Length: 96
Image (cartoon, rainbow, N blue to C red; front, side, top):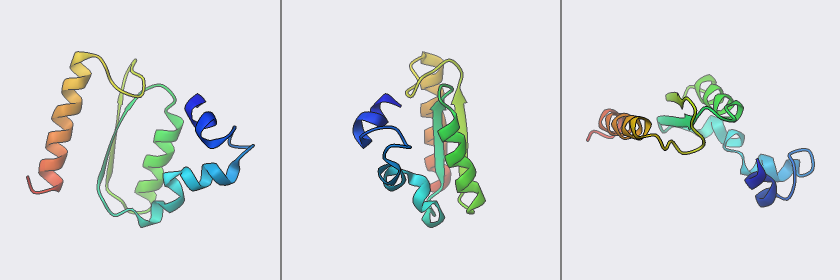
């Protein structure tokens, strides 16, 4: 959240128009690309909201949380899972 506050000039209630403009949820109805969402288990509300919005608008999406990880998984077993899931996702969706 500190990054968002610095980047967008305050908290969501202080700069609601900037947050709305920067939010991928603003245009969720236009998403047609299947999305694989890989996320640490800290601050999960935004990831769950995004996944839910995608699904409710008919987009194909998968959401995976990595226990004990932040924004970018760093544990070797989680990094290996990120790679394996990503390769499988692209093979299934990009015809690789």
